[in-house]
Length: 58
Image 1 (spheres, rainbow, N blue to C red):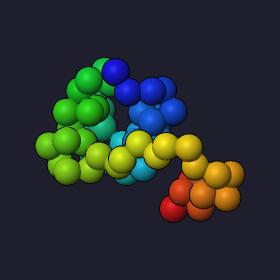
Image 2 (image 1 turned 30 degrees about the horizontal axis):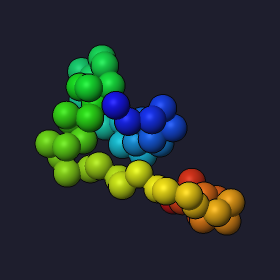
Image 3 (image 1 turned 30 degrees about the vertical axis):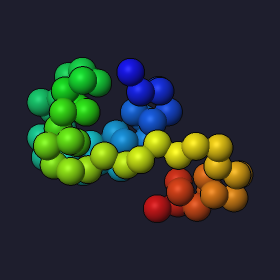
C-alpha cells in the first residue's frame, strides 16, 4: 500500500477537479482511476524542503 501522504497528494492534484471523483469511494478505487487515466505521479524519495515546496506549489 502506498503511504498516506502520497495518496493525499494524488487526491489534491487529480480528484479535486475530477468530474468522476464521487465514484471513488476507497483508496484502491482512486488508484485504479489514476492508473486508467495515466495520472499516477511518482512517489518522491528524500526530497529537500526546497524541492517539496516547489512540488506542492504546482
